[in-house]
Image (cartoon, rainbow, N blue to C red; front, side):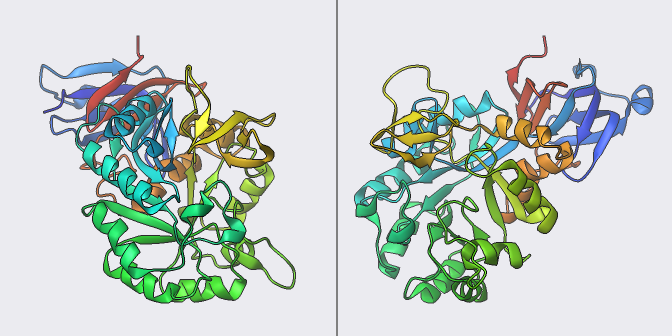
Length: 394
């Protein structure tokens, strides 16, 4: 049972609209009980134990959902430990994240299996952001676009290995990144559909035609758009062109201003339906780490001049971001994207694409996953299923 709470004097960003001078009621079930204009507050009759919090004009928004994240705060999926996944959960709550999908790197099969098993073991024991399930990045990807994934783990399509990876998740694997151009990808895509796994096109050297073939067998989402994929060319639109041209294609986007130029993010928002764009961090283990060595998936790294992680041995190679969802939201708002659109990218869209029930919007009957941000987009509070996980209202 959650404490009944009313957040008053706020701007409620519901996931589809922005409602000024409103209040939000969290009921004892940890769900959104009501959203109403402040003029109606005196008409309401709440139980005597209801906590009233005046948020002083702050934004009341759905908690962020980070659907692609490898690590944060010195904890990473590559540790293959449930304790590290739980460490990620606690640290993510500091940045307004109510739910996340720990993301497994392409690596040797035994390491990928161990990483998946550690995520499953951690589920249900979180003290911060809820673990929604497992995101697997690879191993059926292109050696031409391997990026910071471990090339030793890259494999040709193998349905038995696919089943091994999915079975290790005990029903909790949500999605997998694949290169649509690989031989036997159609068979894998049909099997993925049978097993309710969302496939994303990523780390791919696909032609435009390859992406179209992938769409025909159910690949409608894509991993960190613009990064680690074949470029737009006037005679072969490639993966980038296909995702831009085909409005039905969904895409992740890293909004750190480094992986993708801000003007390209704004162009994407003009050209593609907002519903199909998902903000992710792709953040690494050393993100917001307070001390210790700077390692990501065994690679020595450092924050480059632009603010993304680069490999020490190859400073031109981006290996991931140091972004948080909170900073990503701030960035796109600074880039003149309306806050209600930014909220859709951060919560509403991933919840819909991955079929998370009653999440990602502030609607009566939905889970009370709520982040409160002041006018400077600093966190004042975070509720997860109605429980106040971060309290900075004082």
